[in-house]
Image (cartoon, rainbow, N blue to C red; front, top):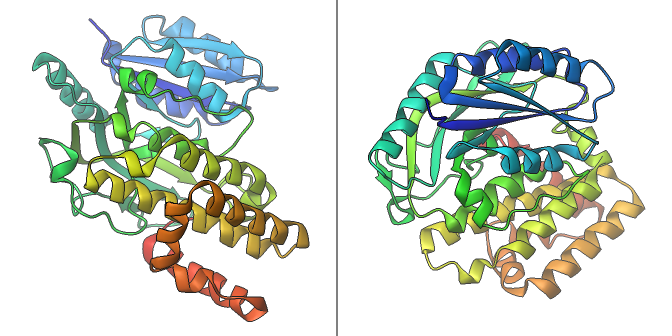
Amino acid sequence: MNKLLSVAIPCYNSQDYMEHCVNTLLTGGNRIEILIIDDGSKDNTLEIAKRLESEHPDIVRAIHQENKGHGGAVMTGIKNATAPYFKVVDSDDWVDTNALHKILELLDGFLKMKEDVDLLVSNYVYDKVGVKHKKVIKYTHALPTDKIITWDEARRFKKGQYILMHAAIYRTKVLRDCGLNLPEHTFYVDNLYVYQPLPYVKNLYYTDTDFYHYFIGRDDQSVQESVMISRIDQQIRVNKLMLDNTDLNAIPNKHLARYMYSYAEIITIISTILLIKSGTKENAQKKKELWAYIRKQHPSFYKRIMKGVFGPVLRLKGKTGRAIQVGIYSLAQKLFGFN
């Protein structure tokens, strides 16, 4: 049976939870290819990966590499993928096994109909420790359901309603053709991974299916605010690459251009607020440098963001201004659900 979906699982010291992730994917049987990328782990991750490969030789491949970070592991997955579709599942996350079968049936249908669906979008669940009612991110207001569409049929996405890595299954060819080259030893590249290929997506499909479970609860997770502040240089690097690698003015489809601008805008706001919240003189200088860079290198983006809803807030000065900026951002976090 030909593989339908290659799934890359980047692993670094993941021995305590990676097997649960793999087991949920194994229910896809021989239609799926599981690439466990051991990114230079110092625990038993590689041994577990090799055992899973020996137990499921037609499904699992264990790939070892020197440590390159999350982006380097994802790029290794793309390089080694043999299936027509590709997904990243982080080693502490997992997928719904019933939903996986629906996803595979959809992919099989695309191939049998010879439909070049470049992006399959599904729902994801914030599986936060201690929270009884899990938040599900859906796209029903932004995308028509259960039909192949172009960007012309996409509606306006709400703030905070972005197609994150958890929601995206790309055609492997799209990832290879778009020139994606995620930086090594850098966190937050998932934003770049899901953003840069979008202008190469001609057709997409949305299924209102709760597929991916995004685990929130470990103290050392990269999305914890204190961790993000400690890695702010990596956040800024990804922010700049998102702007540098895609010319928003050159995107002909106004629906896609609007969506991508909104995505880049919120990433820039997050970078800015984290620099403010750190409270250090060093990061205050980095904030000035970031905005000087945007103003010089991406003047149209700068003008648009300053004329937008966040513009008046960003222009506030002094201690009071910073307090207002952080307060409004915190409120937006609660309303829209972004980090």
